[in-house]
Image (cartoon, rainbow, N blue to C red; front, side):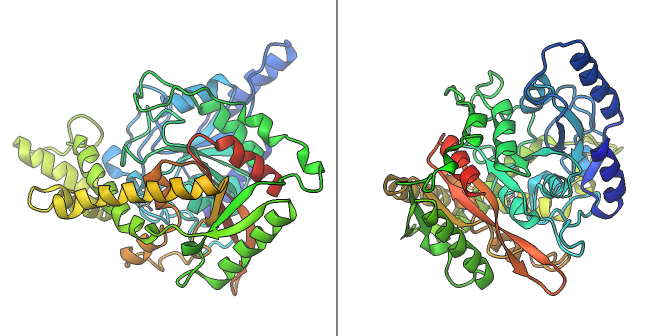
Length: 456
Ligand code: GLN
């Protein structure tokens, strides 16, 4: 009840949730009954989880922050949600997000603007801003988000919580509303590395409903987070850490760089060797990401035709039914992405944009491969600045896109990355958290969790 009371108390200002469950207490009583009867309890028994609204839940609406899916109730749970529930978790509600995951501030939600708990005049980041703010304000214990280009890691950084983007394919995408299918992954928020690791363990694994989910065995992520080797004086002795040079250059807030350098020294104290490493194609990742993500989304969003799901407009003929349902159902950012994507994919421009972007994607992947041969993990800021003001970048999408520079490359390469708080930036009104991003080789979440747990 502490969480529920806090949720009730803080929600009017924060607006992190689009829907709050009315059966939480009943579900909690069921857990109490199991305890009383000595029945077996799952590893997440009674854990209150917030779920991003683009992840399907059978008993609650799932709108993906869009009017086109207003009141849409899917007939099934996403695989990740089903797995969590099997472990005893209780879904407390659905969290606010930028429409279809397109945005970095959560201002792009068709319903409401979520505030940053550290300073209510600032954005929580996005697109999983509701999930990050909810954990930061302890409205729930952990939450699920999705990360196509940074949507778990950047809001984690802005809200001072832990955010974990798994390797592409580690978690089933079945039931995740598709944005850009070759980049999308469900990720975890927690107030500690251990919480994020335990949640990841519950939702990982192969799923016959998602052909891109990996058949690799799922290691016991939780055990990495209770490792006690940090009782040694140099628990990370021998670990090679590469600080990505391109992420601490001009254009990045100097106070963010100071925090990251401080974190690097802390890693050295723990026994790591830290060296600077260059990813020459780093800056090409941002334009390539926006071309690929928009292209894939223009195709994925074609399914919202006013017939199959959600909002339908009354019209005399089919074309106007499609046209009017989409015109009224999608917000302006989503329409812009569909236009950009359709343009990039069109016959005369395909070679100049989409194909080039795919070539850049190969370069980015190759850069990471080389850097991760020399290093166990790579580090960078999670975002070039701390949380900015609500409204500040609303009419300047390009500057909002530029804020994704630290995260998009990781999605292009499909790698896992962990973000955790590592310092503060002083603003006039509040201290604002800064997050460090730790990037690992594919399927090496265990290593990230271990380092993160010892670091925090
Ligand atoms: N901000 C990025 C975008 O708008 C990433 C969003 C995400 O990861 N879903 O595409």
